[in-house]
Length: 162
Image 1 (cartoon, helix red, strand yellow):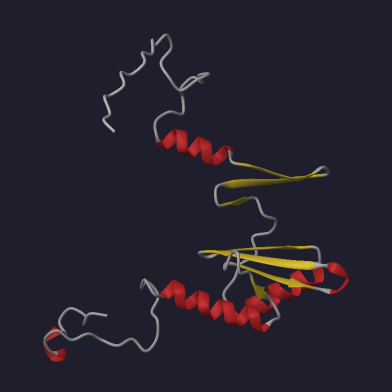
Image 2 (image 1 turned 90 degrees about the horizontal axis):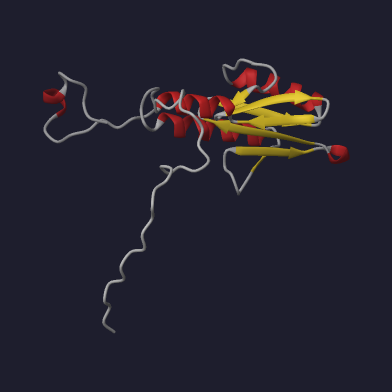
């Protein structure tokens, strides 16, 4: 870390500060937070996935499982053991400042809707936001992304010498 403005002279030329603790707002702070989070969650018996390091899981009795997924400052909890999910929320609340937002509705551009038939996932809102951002929200749909009635011509092959 470079010396704060006004302290350059007291530190000397070409000197830097050694951080003893990560600070919020620095590039290293998310890594330090995730490292601490990983230690805490592993202490509670969860295993970190090797395929996706932001996913932790715990297999319980009778074939039940609880899964936790982290993305930046969002955590998604799912599983078929309601008691373990509640215990995990309590443990996380003791270690971190958390807020339970209830059933999952929107995550990483995906909308989730529950019904008797199951859970449905769509990206309608993401696509509408993308169309709005690119100024194409009010455009008419087309069968193909090309101007109609365009006559395509074959390209002339270049002479290639072996």
